[in-house]
Image 1 (cartoon, one colour):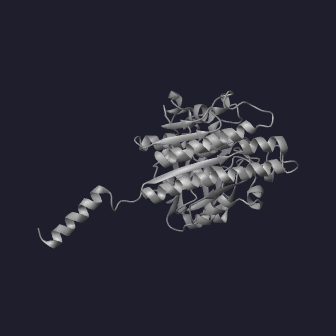
Image 2 (cartoon, one colour; image 1 turned 60 degrees about the horizontal axis):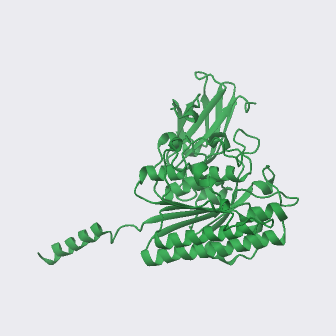
Image 3 (tube, helix red, strand yellow; image 1 turned 135 degrees about the vertical axis):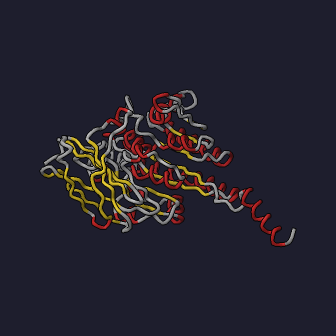
Length: 414
């Protein structure tokens, strides 16, 4: 074997062994309950600032589109499920914290991830067991029999080790336990896709509103995020893995006292995201992203290929990588649809698909019709729908780098 063929053989073996392969990608997303953006921005939070210095901070919003078909209550479990599924309440059907009838046809990120990568590991570390048993639907047939590989939750039901007290300090102890398990599991087992949920900040908000107690709780959260980020940094350094960390909240708080939420006031709708990723894309920097954008962002980072029927229902837009279009608006005008969007990447065309059914809601297929195709840069289409008479339309705009969807219903026609 001469030097040339020997060198080629070494390179081939290196590729086979993964020496030159792309680092394994892993993701952790965190929901820290009930913290308005203004609080994150004005407090001294050294660990969160450390993460921002490595990545990005942006304001976000929850609540869907105000006064529209997808307006969504700014309530905890509602927000969690909007993140998990990338959809608003009109689709995922979790309007409150009771979680009585989630529509699992709108598949959450763990289900999509496991369908493509059945050998990879998932984890949930949660101060509320319902996140796993009801929202994720752990081992439920109707939720696709998804099984979380690692789960640490249910501590709120353990009143022996976490005796409930009126000051709700037991919730801080539970959050500490959740973070302890998350950091230990990440360091040792490094699950590929993990969710960390922490509740104490919301409890302090309800009890004390905007107050020293609430601010102290947010500072405790900051310390917890420091521990979590240290575990991620350990994995990155020791095992050369690429980790995406996304930290957000599920809702803001009312302007008057800070005790309430659930409505559509600006402070209740305005949330935030901290991530170690940079840079965010043009969509994220030009507009105010939404909680539903986190799921498609993780899909893109983790290379999750979403089936087309599921993709057409996702309300979010990726915050990383190229995005062709955003800000879609559709209006019904005398047998036509007036459709507009903002062009972010000029290349290619927008395919306009239409259906008059919503059979996807029941787990069936909608029959879409291609009713138009125009350049991305036109930012407008005028579509004749006289051959599709209906009081209801689902419209999908399929562009080269992303897909948007809108509904027109009888109630929203003017």
